[in-house]
Picture 1 (cartoon, rainbow, N blue to C red):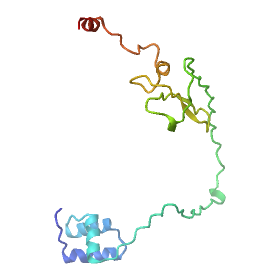
Picture 2 (tube, helix red, strand yellow; picture 1 turned 90 degrees about the vertical axis):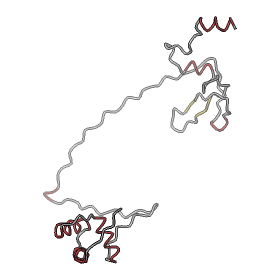
Picture 3 (tube, rainbow, N blue to C red; picture 1 turned 90 degrees about the horizontal axis):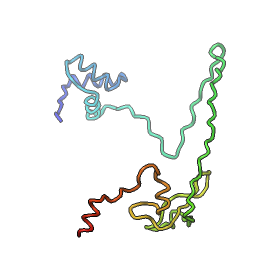
Picture 4 (cartoon, rainbow, N blue to C red; picture 1 turned 120 degrees about the vertical axis):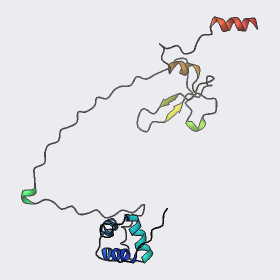
Length: 177
């Protein structure tokens, strides 16, 4: 950062502008126009602080947890009042019934999240209604998955192959070994 040495005339001009209530950015612009300088708003602010010129206080931020009193809104009177325009009503959405997925091969243990162990199936049950508890399957997980084998297959697209079949080349290599 390059130090800026303010001439005494520039400091005097800054004092005059601030005394008149001019903002620091406007004071810097006026000083630059008068003295052919390139002071910035921050340079003027810093110089004013070093000179001990009273800097206007910023409004204090609200303390968290406190509320400012609401500002009074002036109601329009007479000719200013206009009738309220009717607003278009939003079309109500039709409630879509989500199909319930079930897995006949599994009788879930309905464990809550805290009760799940490291190797337990994380397939969720419930939570569809407001306030309904979500429980999990809890049966042993399939290796490499978060779900047990039936829930693993239930959560996959049946049209896509789940796993690649071993090619005949690899089978021959394994048999030869």
